[in-house]
Image: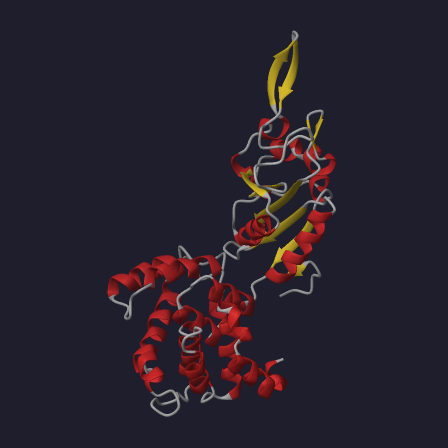
Length: 343
């Protein structure tokens, strides 16, 4: 990562966007493809109960920003698009405002970009002011990543607040634990953080491993205990050949691990604790993804057999997946005993 101050991880980006939107500024989020910038924006719209309108600027014309020409009393006027709420419009049913998402913003034509000037700075379309509860956010890929982008004018860039989203494997693991990503993928990225995002714009591969494609890969392997040749081909088409081979090899590790049934039958001594690091990472995710309120005491007995650093990893995963378990007396006791390493 470079030392640019505006390089942010997903958590920092969320905080910056919220503060900008509160005061009516227009943030512009750039990143390599597949890092989840759109997901951050959609989550903000959900959290603040805003009606989200996703506008693909690369597919838009100037009239989509300015309005459509019309005739009124023998003179030309403009009909404003319905997706830009005016100050006289009622709030959407059950919503507290609007969030207009200009996606692929730096991929539109120069004419469309110029047509957006008034929206971005004056929050107006044609001669009409937008609703005070309407906010804008923009996003786009980076020109250095061989994505379809255009150089934006200084008139545009000076109307925006700029951020560059960076990959952070720990934040992605938190997200993955909360979104039912296959635990074997999470284990792999715990063990090899760099494989979570390997993007080379000059590669001949058709795709690459990144947060977006790992989420796709989770669907490819869901419910499959082993990876056959067809599944490996599908994985190669999802995350690239190298990452697919690595994941398939890593999944073979699970064949040597004790099953969750064996662990639950005798959590204190009925299973062999792995000593090789890749297997230790694998067992942490197996345990955390199978923990719930019905088995938490047995699970803690099993987890406490791991080295302390892997106990911490397992409990952090449990918090992400089952935050309600933080109130369980057995977990509270473990935290009290291990607060120095937990925090």
